[in-house]
Amino acid sequence: MSRKVGQIIARGEHRWLVRVYLGRDRETRTRIYHNRTIYGSLRYAQAYLTKRLHERDLSRGVEGLQVTVDEFLDHWLKTAVKPKVRGKTYGDYAAMLRRYVRPIIGARMLASLSPLEIQATYQDMIDRKLSARTVRYAHAVLRAAIRQAIRWQLILADPTQGVQLPSPHCREMSVLNTDQARSFLRAAAHSPQECLFAVALTTGMRPSEYLALCWRDIDWDRGTASVVRSIHRHDGQWMFTDTKRARSRRIVKLQTWVFELLRHLRDGKCSSVASDSAFADLIFATARGEPINEEYLVKKHFKPLLLEAGLPNIRLYDLRHTSATLVLTVGVAPKVVSEQLGHASAAFTLDTYSHVLPHMQEEAAAKMEAVLMNGTSR
Image 1 (cartoon, rainbow, N blue to C red):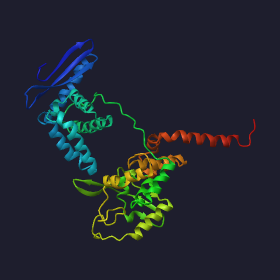
Image 2 (tube, rainbow, N blue to C red; image 1 turned 90 degrees about the horizontal axis):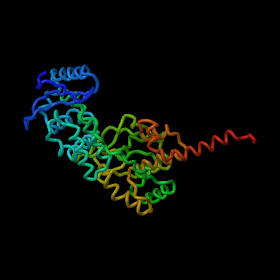
Image 3 (spheres, one colour; image 1 turned 30 degrees about the vertical axis):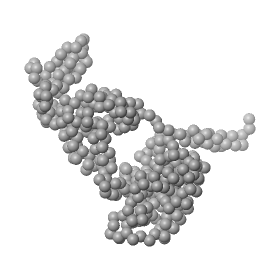
Image 4 (cartoon, one colour; image 1 turned 90 degrees about the vertical axis):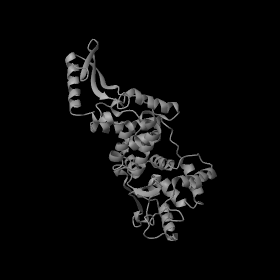
């Protein structure tokens, strides 16, 4: 069989190396091959070669010979990612690739990209002391891009398969206990952002969700808030976007005292923001009527409150975790908590807050024992 078309090389008993010629590298002019070790009979190896040659004849992989990884990623981000995801997600994908993937393999030809080169990319990240979570996130983004390249028939196989990833490290969740939550709320009572922190701690909303709340989202008759959007800053511009997922759109019951704080805030509002402003209806806004920057909120208000109350140095997002932990601890059904948080499923909620389960199991066992032993004697 012609060497320029395909080749089967014996590598041992019932082991064969199948090589399919893909062309030449545009820069180095070296030959590019698709190589795969096949175990089994010669007939099985021949069948695999025939299949790959057929794909090659259908031009699968040929176009990819003339495309670098950088060129492909540019096209993928523009046509496959940007139209389908939120601006923040698009920015995160682009930044992840720009920082860690493109510098190592961006100049390589897409069709000749190998698992070994991808492994070297991840090893470079590990050598730079980046977390396992960052490495795995970069892998997830690159793998999504590569799989799209296969669907677009630019390459034959997935070079991200078989690479070794660092084991994920389970970070211990930082939450406030009941007494600490009370201390936080007492300290927040003297803050101009008292209402915001009350909503954050009692509803379990994400920061991007409660910072996007508008007055029209409050049902004053039922005492509820509708979570229907989030807010992000992209390319220097604020914009409303969809919630993280479809199930994140939800109605949250407000505690009575939080509802009264919102009413008081509404009655005391004297906004000078133009009524045609996209953010005129925001509940939580700056004095100029602009969305509140999360980083500014943390630095100017949240961290000083923690320090004042003598509380652990948690993240703003941990108020969401605190809310979920507290309601699970007092016996609220996980299904209800899942719906309040906008999780994909109750199973995800239980997995995320598994640290609460021992307490719940003890309480359940005690209640069950009371039912069974009531009126019985030994």
